[in-house]
Length: 240
Image (cartoon, rainbow, N blue to C red):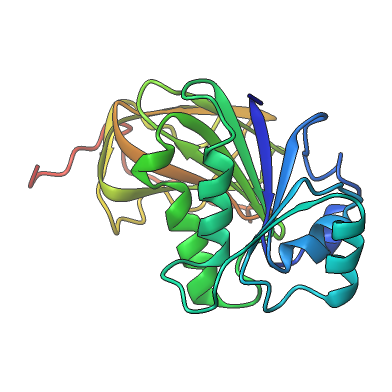
């Protein structure tokens, strides 16, 4: 059983460069979701498995993959999940119960609803035991769960946002960011942790409860005049 699986879904990957630049670990199993096959081949990846209803993959890419020995798992178009979710579920079956790593490339295929669904699916409880990272175009998304601190890397001044999902995130603690959090609570819908920025080339995020998406949109922060009022790194929602 492998420890690393890459899922390539429909979406923009032209700016990634070669597979190594996209962060694809050597020796990882590659799963494509429908037209993600075209994207994977554009990255120079050999695709091990193709999953989906295959309504948007190109005939050329499909023929090339089949000739190369890719295993094809075709689903009916009348289904209850996106091709991306089906591919992630398939990838989950390839990973060990503990210690597995999942990297998702692409995302959305130009549709906001698909992009949001892809991001939310990465924070699903079924993936709680897997270390999940995604690259959606220029953005990098890192999923943080309790007792699993994650590091994020980038340029000093690069913007970073923390988004709580599926309920309140508790005990949120960060290092390496301009506005630190220390054992803080973040409630769904808050923008408190949006548009932070790196002050070092590496930052860490950890939580004690809930799930947080750390989003690096690939943009640099504009200069900000420091506040004149105190900053509280340990905010807790008064309604908790």
